[in-house]
Length: 161
Image 1: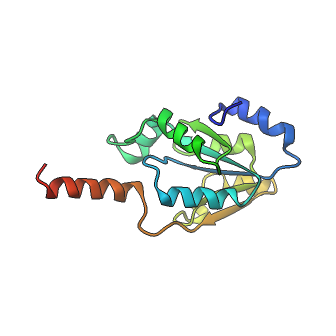
Image 2: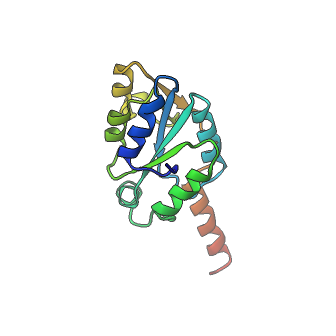
């Protein structure tokens, strides 16, 4: 089984060794991968034995971020995430939140950026009810895909292009 998997394959793969391994789940768009993403994912991985990344599909990103996003298509975003050593599995989802994935996987740890209020983290109640915990990870200040896009546009405008 490769790293980019369907929910069905992921559930089957995790269930075989679940008693021995602590599963961490996080999610995001991961549109233009940057150092902030990498540090966040490494920290999430350090919270357990297996890191599962729920990746917003292209249609999901458009619904959340607007018609100009994503910049990078889901197949390529999946490939890049899967290439990271700290990521064990990548699974796409279409909804506005990964709630269905979280309900199906019941991870031991649900990791989200500290920019999310605890009450707004989708699936937190599911994870807590199943005996898991929610971890809010401090993000790298000033590092975001939105800031990268903004900077590119500013440079383009400054050069009169």
